Amino acid sequence: MGVPFEALIPYGIMLAMFGVTGAGLSKIRHMQNGGKRARHSVDQWDRVMMDRDRRLTGYLRGQTDSPSAPAGFELNNPWRLEKRII
Image (cartoon, rainbow, N blue to C red; front, side, top):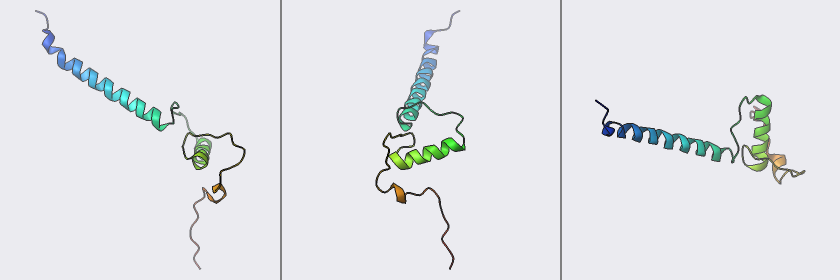
C-alpha cells in the first residue's frame, strides 16, 4: 500500500517555509554587509580597519578612495578616555 499524496503536503509546506526563511535571512545579511559577502576569520587588525572605515564612510563595510578625510573626522577619535578626576 502506497503513501497517499495528502500526507506529503505538510512536508512540502514545511520545506517551503524553511526555504523562504533561509533565503530571507541570507538576503538580510547580504544587505547588512553593504552588498558584499560575509567576512570570515576576522582578527583584531580587521576589526580596527572596519571601525576606521565605519567612521570614514558611515558603513561598516564601506571604503573610500578619497585621499583626504571628510570634515569632522579629526574630531572623531576611536579612543574612549576616562574623565579626569581633579
